Amino acid sequence: MRFGAPSYSPLYYLAGFLLLLSVSGCGEGHTATATPSGIFIDSSTEHFLQKAFDEVKVCTEAKEGKFEEISVIVMPPTFPCKYYDSGCAGEYVSPNSIKVGSLNTWRHEVIHYLLNQNTGDPDSGHKSAFFETCA
Image 1 (cartoon, rainbow, N blue to C red):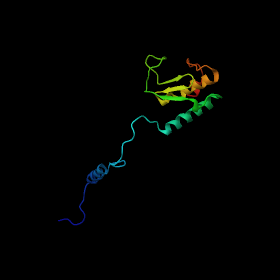
Image 2: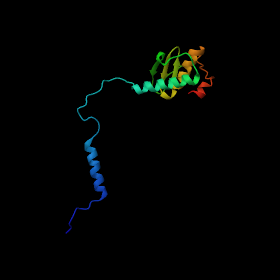
Image 3: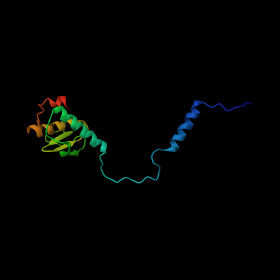
Image 4: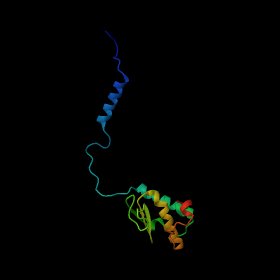
C-alpha cells in the first residue's frame, strides 16, 4: 500500500494541458457576427505604400509627384499586361495608376511614376540607375 500523492508521468500532465487548450478555443467565442463581405485593405498597407513611396522619392531626388495623386489598383499576383506574355506583377499606367500584384513591385512602379512626373519619360526600358539603387 502506498501513501502520499500518486506519481504520474510527464505525458499525463502534457495530455491534460493539451485537453484544456482544445476545449478553451480561441477568438471571441461563438457569438461573433459575420463581417461584411467584400475586399478590404488594412490601413497598415496604405501606411507601408506611402512610407515606401516617400523613401523612393527621397532616393530619386524627385521634385514632382505625390502619393496622394496615385491610383493604386490591387491585382492578382500575375496579371495580363502589354509588356510580357507571361504577365506582370506590377505595372505603371500613365499618368497616375499603379497596378500591384505583389507589394514587392511597389517601389519599382513608383520609380516609373516619378520618372514620368519629373522627366516626361517613365523609362519602360529600365535604363535608369534608380531601378537598381532605389527599388
